Length: 215
Image 1 (cartoon, one colour):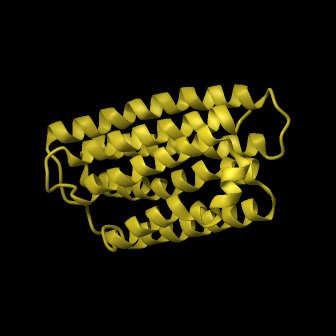
Image 2 (cartoon, rainbow, N blue to C red; image 1 turned 120 degrees about the vertical axis):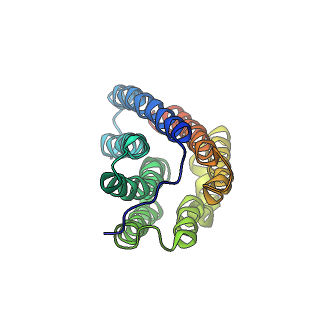
């Protein structure tokens, strides 16, 4: 097993861990709110989608917070794998309620299955080739995040304009943050900045899903 090398200073890792530790706490609170919200409505797959989305948020932020707080190199390597795998899970998890509830039908299911197949491929890539093919991983993140644009007309007609703008803005935030992910360890605190972009992007998408999907 190839152990991960220390990449960050103690101050950087503290900020990395604290930021996504806060994200984990907020995600748990947000998940509870979503569950209470979905109990008010009777929609197909609503509870299923809420569970997947909520858990994808919690697992990403929790695994990231643990990864950046662990000092032991062996365990840090393991949590690095889990952390990176959870990025694929979050993207697919975020799209799950949008695809199955808002869009629905054949298109929604095709894109839902496609998202999770790609996520599974990405997870295999991270588990067996940790630290390699980083550019390919980033391209997969981007592909998953923007794949819905191939069915832009159906997306626009299935959600309100405000919801579409929130979805688009959140995607732009995530994509912009990738710049700091790519220059990781070249500029001090770049990974922490990436964390802030992830938190902002996920907050915007959460607002969209809470107000316009789980309703």
